[in-house]
Image 1 (cartoon, helix red, strand yellow):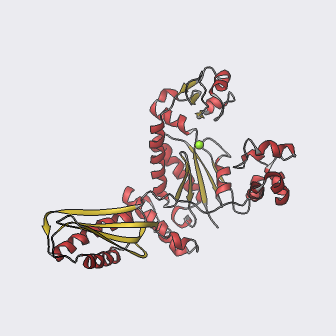
Image 2 (spheres, protein in one colour):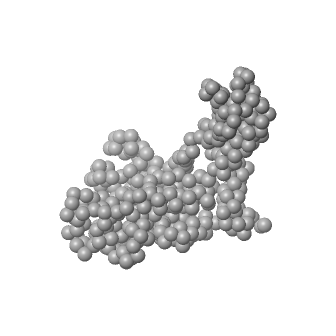
Image 3 (tube, protein in one colour):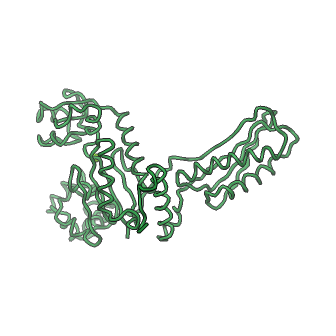
Amino acid sequence: MKTIFHLDMDAFFVSVERVLDSSLEGKPVIVGGDPYGRGVVAACSYEARKFGLQSGMPIRTAFRLCPQGIYLHGHGKEYERYSNIVKEILESYSPTVQQASIDEFYLDFTGCEIIYGTALSLAQKIQFDIWQQFALPCSIGIASNKTIAKIASDYKKPKGITLVAQGKEKEFLAPLPIEKIPGIGKKTFPLLRARGFKTVGDIANSSPDYLSVLLGKFGNELWEKANGNGSEILTIERERKSISKETTFGTDIVDKVAIEIKLFELTGKASQLLRNENLQVSTVSIKLRYSDFVTVTRARTIIPTDDDKAIFNIAVDLFRKAFTRRVGIRLIGIHLSKLSYFGEQEVLFEDENIIRKRMLRAVMKIRDKYGYQAIHIGKT
Ligand SMILES: [Mg+2]
């Protein structure tokens, strides 16, 4: 059974604007450009929503409904910067963070109760952390799959936390209006309403065959969602494609041992970067450049590891086989590629030890940052 969080920043663009300019606090703020222009509302504050405004609405319509609003063009670069900051905070809590959009994240906290206590108190802690550090509000949904977690994060906003207990998914969904299901949009909504579907429960009680005739491929998916089913797999971006460390010698070197010592040093640094990011390497390469600029690279694919010694053994072997000329060396380098997250493969098999290992690594990272007292595991 999975414990998945969906964290959604509340009126994110507006919240960032308020960080940049506190005089916007408590006012109807609309991000999306010129009120006389052709743009749409990118985001609006909860004060503006009281006038009937919502994102996606033409700015002109918004202006008609709320002429006293403050209309801003927005600061795209700042939104990105704060989005990255939020992601960094989240990654200090869990190594498994999937960014779904600029202001939405999925986190996998399966099996973390031993480390963090209840999922609910963890959500409160994360929400408070982001609020206290950056004055950015967010809402969190907790459930056994991504779909329910996303619907739950939207259930109480702003600054809400909603936990859907295991086994209560259908019960939670049943009374909600159909448009709460992700994927029901401008096309599908009228189709379903015309056939009398009002609540998610109505969809759940229908049949997948009927919905497929009505909506095509989406019909079956929709029925599954309405019945509380959804994906549990987080797709994690690989920001790091590879890690490289290389050195150019001041003078060309022929001494094999001296070069191997350098290679050892570079391997240590590269492996440290690997472990810092919870990564393992599958392809180890070396590069050497002779004094006449002839450059040789050699690579080998191995079982994923983050172990210095294993990586160095491969690197030095590649080096010895590549260093065949009696010519001085001016550059030596190591390159680690085909990187995967630690325990990624094994997690498919739900091995508790692996999950625990992953969590321990996340804990170690938090301790590195905030000190040993930051987190207690179990009864320590
Ligand atoms: Mg949001």
